[in-house]
Length: 168
Image 1: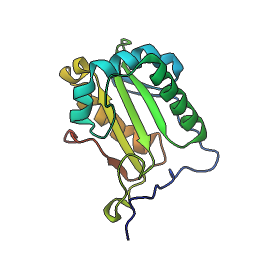
Image 2: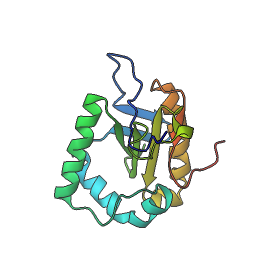
Image 3: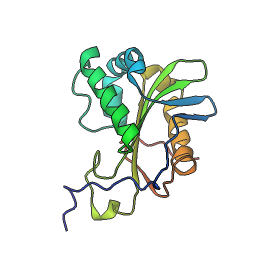
């Protein structure tokens, strides 16, 4: 069977609410909102090539504008509120913007296949060049591996980035 046109729902219990703040070590992830607009636009535009190289996928195709990204952030807010997906702006404990992470239903970002049916969430992330150089790409991956099964009710996450650090 071809599952490529299907998308699974995120398996969360009725009444469950996703955390709006996640912390581990020197990483702090906040549910993304319009309030993150300036940091997000600057971070994306400084990271276009790095995002394509590490996260992969069809986004971003070009630099983002504040107007266009505002719409995207509102969409992420609505998805978070409605439980359709969870997107976080990521900072270090000193308040430096590091990038974003996403917990999407299987089939939204990554085409669903028979081999992927057992996975319950598609996890991806990107960081700025400065954050990448300081090791935060791997640190965020480790934090996501913890959060996805400790702070969320997921049991079998799929990490869909093209570049995935080895788990330690």
